[in-house]
Image (cartoon, rainbow, N blue to C red; front, side, top):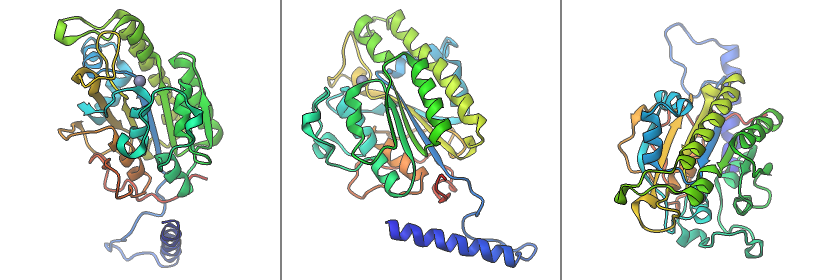
Length: 322
Ligand SMILES: [Zn+2]
């Protein structure tokens, strides 16, 4: 793949040279990618344990203004699916490897360094193999399993509140300008376990604390979007916002639809689709869609497929981040 990529880059360089020497005739079409296409960037945001019904409730109440603004310029599904077990570590591994637990083998949900590194490729390792810089800021140590050796340039554990995650993200964007950035916000999950996700089957609303945690995530999202828009790369950005699972009562992990249903939304200049996607979305699709935006084909054995949300030109901007 690497050889093919270099060859493609060479063709682009050659066509750039040709264009410089021989301007196209008026009215003629220049085929191939525009040489000036900026390097793509993908930011994957996970609100741990964010339940679609609670997000929709807060949106109706006008209490997630940053997310509302994002939705106005993007697309979404409120009916995505995570894997079973609907618990944090296996779900995140599927989200970022494009394969189900029967392939990646991670069924545990705690920090177990003795298990060794992941046995399968990740969105990070594939992006890295194609010359992109990668980074992640996570709120739980066990998620560092996603960092296969050599695959993540900056692997940051930040256990503070959402604003602390956002601050670290802004710093890493400024310092290394990664083309693939994963941000994990643990706050909704912690509040869900402590105070409750609510239970639609029993008519129990989500706890005030859980809803407040989602609002904290929204405030962090507002600041993150300001950073992403400020540096001019928003037009070449794909931002995916999703969750690893939902929850009901004080827990998750079961086959209950309230645990398994996840939100999935995409926005940024690389996104062409608008509104409800009306297409099935599985958490494995996040990795495939992220790679698609970076111009990398997802491995054939992946269960995850690219969600049809990107502009036709996305993935053709082959210039690597400098
Ligand atoms: Zn979780």
